[in-house]
Image 1 (cartoon, rainbow, N blue to C red):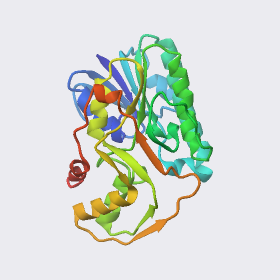
Image 2: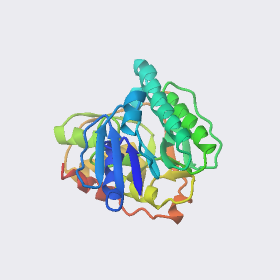
Image 3: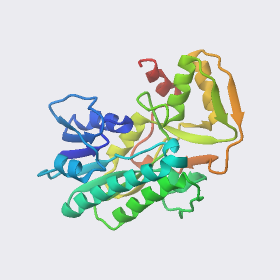
Amino acid sequence: MKILVTGAAGFIGTELVKVLIKTNQVVGIDLKPAKIKSKNYKHTICDCANPVEFFKACAKQDFDVIYHLAATVGVQNFTGEAVPDSLMNNINIDHNMMLYLSRHPKTKVFFTSSSEVYGDCNHASEQAPIDIKITPRSSYAVEKLMFETYLRTRPGSTILRLFNIIGPGQDPEKGVVAKFYWAIKTGQPVTIAKGCSRSFCDVRDAVGEILMISEPGTYNIGSNLINLTIEELFQKMVRFFGSELSITKFVPGPSEIFDRSPNLGKILKLYKPVYKLEDTLETFKNI
């Protein structure tokens, strides 16, 4: 098959491309250079929010499948003065993809949405009604839902709601495990929100789940093997890496999500996660 991956040089995109190129011809586009070299892979540095660059990169190419990962992510990009630019960037990226898909109705698409669409929700189900607490950070979730709504009207579309994907390639500004790892490595003090819990998923399991999906629909992507409070996560990481750091605990503000975990009944019929927290942390030693 011929496959397009947007955001191909990102954290999840890189892991996805690694697996796809084993049996497919893959085209990747991203603002950043490729991290992978293969005869089965062609990479173009491209701003997916720029229609001229995006359509030039995709010109005269018909793809069987598109994995649409490109987006501005990270809570810090959806708070304060960063919100307008981050939100507009994602709107432009998804608008360009909508235009491409409207001209290629037979192309299957997988879209990485987010667990943010559930707000504060334990055991979140794909069928549950969406009830977002309106805060500046919720603009990210609302934009994801906008593109989800478009895809629900389009045959051959799959929505992937990701739950805290973790691994060594993640930007410390965008993932708490990577943030804690670099704090431990450099001896920096850590600030932790009190009373918050999360379900985490190794990026290798996330890609494994995504690639097992054959029927269009909405799927939670996550793991039932790593579920703990942020304080417990930090303490386990300190013990694993053999470090001692001072921590400051604070009471989260009104925009903080206190508890979020997925209902994985749908995806577990296709794939069983295998990586525990210790398996993920072990990969950080190779950085």
